[in-house]
Image (tube, rainbow, N blue to C red):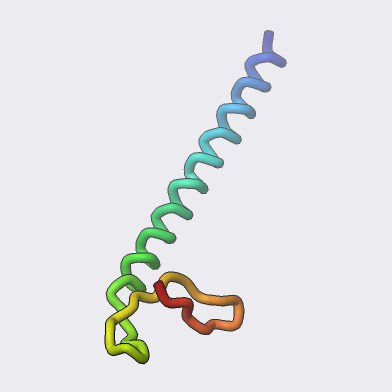
Amino acid sequence: MAESMFMYAVAAGVFVFLVGLLSATRGARGRRGHEAMPETHSGGSGEGKRIKKFKSDGTPVYD
């Protein structure tokens, strides 16, 4: 009985830890994403383009 309660407590602890980690990474990603959205770049045709993402070398990829 004690062994099954211990296993339940360990499984619940791991679950709570993973849910906390997931919510923390989603929050950090959301804050970072809102800061980069308003940036625009005028291309050769004069229209503004939003930065969609960045390449591994740091150069922007436009939408």
